[in-house]
Length: 315
Ligand code: TUI
Image 1 (tube, rainbow, N blue to C red):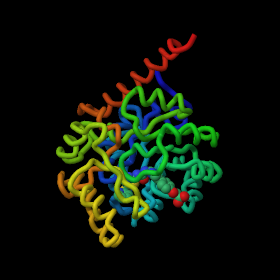
Image 2: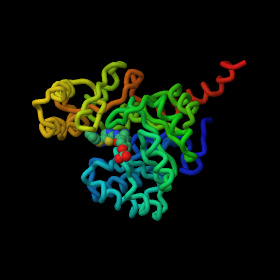
Image 3: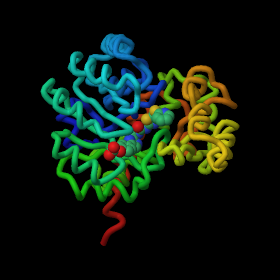
């Protein structure tokens, strides 16, 4: 059985987080992952405070296990979402796409374990000083908004820099990735792409099929010019974005306009041309729809076997 120090602290059986994917990570997916013994996480990104409160209520009806909420700091609703999670006494909060410093005090005094997602050693160190329980070190293999470093380089550098637990994310979708993350100094993993095709994941069927069929080179990064690099499956939208991003006659405002509403069009409408199908580089390994419970137990079972066999590499 694969276990680490975060399991007892967070009240989970397996050290596996489900990424708080915008528009994707709802009560259905989060409760299924938590019921499977991992940590399900609701995305706060696409909701205002009251919508999030309703989603938390739905999740509590579906599971009595701990679950988390992700606060996307670039969201226009970040401040009200930050208040709701404190009022609701959510046991675990992850944050993304920024520095959650201004919210730390109120969350800590509500007894919440704060786990910022970081893409650099500097932010990991700062979060440890501010009282974070752990950090998720997320490499650029991930889908969605990404930093500059790869998981392979980021995780060991963060693990060396801080004393709090490190959870690895980016490019992990099976037991090999999980075992490797533990060898890099992590004591847990967060997966997004693999959970996109969970049976309890409510995204449009077109999105699931794209992930199931994707190969190793099917994601691209757009938005570097705007300072917000985002990884998604290549399609007409990313091709147009790439071309316009390289064209200096196109203004930044015009560029931002292309992406507006694209996440919703992908996740809820399955719009193959105009949707932004956020997805990690590891999609090529994700070839089967399974229940969240099958995913969690399969990944942990594989990792356990690999780690048990590790002595075979040494003499
Ligand atoms: O946040 C994510 N991934 C996301 S958020 C998202 S919603 C969105 N959709 C379209 C465009 C923009 C956003 C989709 N995917 N992951 C966590 C993450 N955080 N990755 C990188 C970072 C990060 C980057 C810079 C965290 C902090 C940071 O700088 C902090 C500072 O010092 O200000």
